[in-house]
Length: 148
Image (cartoon, rainbow, N blue to C red; front, side, top):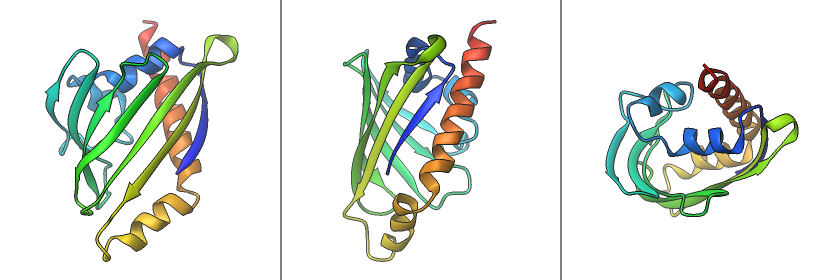
């Protein structure tokens, strides 16, 4: 899956939203992160390992996030409900009017045969547009709340 997102959030606000692994993570990402299944497993200064899923999704992943590069947040799937792995990244660049432009990519690999059709739909359907809109809405809201 690959898509771009324009948001009113500054690059620093975007970075904070993606790297906040406190209890606020479920609040910030309430449309795309299921608070009931979220679990922070480990965390360092520029990395974290968390179990996450989307509300209503049959999939969950344990991903290792790395944000040692200030302009890129990377993740690698280390465990999943679909039996495979994958990786991805969010590249953050300054946008217009103090906002940001994000380039997002992720893949899923080596899924069990029974899970491949669902993952294919996720990565090859209009889901990218839907997810990019949810990211933009989430980050715009985060930017607004971060100003207060």
